[in-house]
Image 1 (cartoon, rainbow, N blue to C red):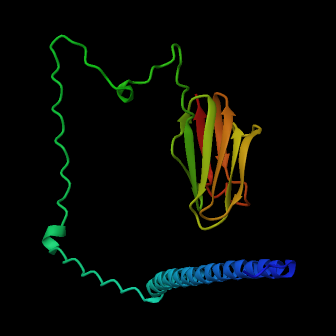
Image 2: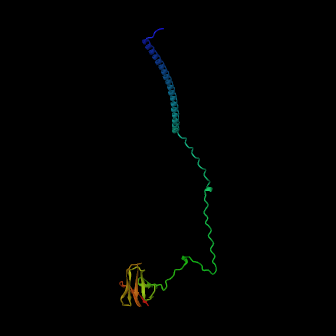
Image 3: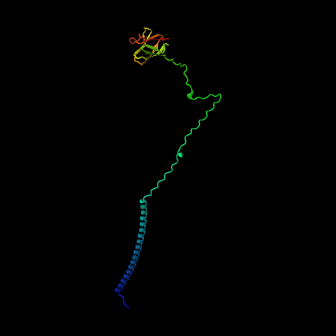
Length: 225
């Protein structure tokens, strides 16, 4: 039996340590290889799932793009509605409703009157003023014609009309030689003038003051009663 020495024991211990280290190293390498293989498989699976998602995303985008860019189909024009015959379009004339019958008047009742039928009431004590008398004096060569020869005393309207061819006038005096009560200026042919006088009872002389006209007969008398 060989006798061991301290050196030999140390070598043996070193060999055992190396064997242990080698065994643990191989186990570690195997574990790393196995982990690397599983990681590679996981990466491939992840890559395949990512590609699938990308494909689905691209497919949805392509569908939206086609829906956006494809032109819409134009709507078909509506067919015009058939025209109705002219006889159907004619509107019948409007017929006025019949007038209601008049209400019967009961005997003994007082008929009602509308405001337009009520006669206007006269003011008590009101008296219509008397009309002013008119006298028309027409002149020709050489005379006067009076529409009336007498008038009541008070206001009198005298109207002078020159129906002659020459110019004439009219003078009104109280009596034969009394003062003038009124006068009309020289009036051409077809001229007309009007004058209102307050005349007292008596006789008034009417004459033309143009040269020679009174002497030729342009003179008349008006009586005021």
